[in-house]
Image 1: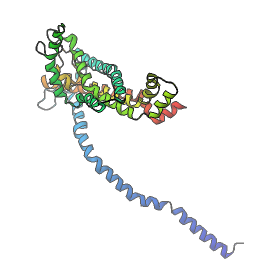
Image 2 (image 1 turned 180 degrees about the vertical axis):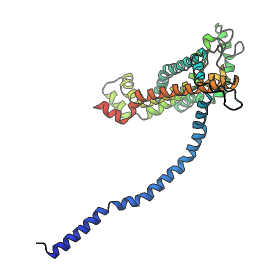
Image 3 (image 1 turned 120 degrees about the vertical axis):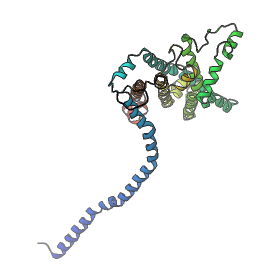
Image 4 (image 1 turned 60 degrees about the horizontal axis):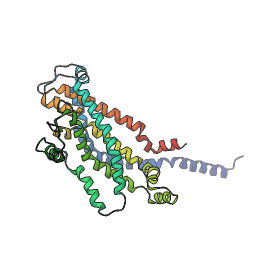
Length: 332
């Protein structure tokens, strides 16, 4: 039999239990205004950037896709719908195929040339020496220069007959091409590659130097105590720890090479005989010089798809190594 005291105590316990069950709801009610406030803060800070991103990135992309389905000369309404004919014209155009190969050539040669040279110079400048800061500044100066200024300077240096490069080669008995290095299809692309290496090697060196600053000096000292030579220390200790920086630079170099336009446009405008044409110069040439905005729109969409596909492949097979989850799975 249950006594009144027991009933009261039981009732009080039930009531207390009921209150205890209702307690977890109170923090949710107190967090809700805070969540709204945080959401408003996020919207307030990101809205200007999102508006600009939509105006200057998303909307032009939508218009380029729209233009690519029409034959349009840049004036009047879009009425001549041609479907995928512009894409077929671009993909079967030998000039565009050559431009795509030139972009891939720049991607490969940038990594083949700038990666080892950049690592070697960065390792050298990372050692204690006199005038270290001045040397680092000199290496980075070409990257600071605007592309237009650097392009015009190199254009003048490479002029045939009166250019400085031809004059120096003539002094040592070497005769340059009659049309100049930028005017001969055999040398034009390689000459552009030399200028690009001079322009962007400083960025690679600075990034590698920043990565080397994060390598603990204790590891080098431990390797040296164990009898490792300087080369073995760099090969088995420093370079593996520099891997994330190298992979990030490789991604930036690849994307920049696919979008290459300004330096080529200043030096050669894609010539001679389309030997230095890139995808970007092709679409600008079609749009601004020939007023084939439909062809230019299709070329821009193809350029975007190629860059996006290579970026996703790079992210999938190379950059994922820097993901902590991938490192944990690899360690298992």
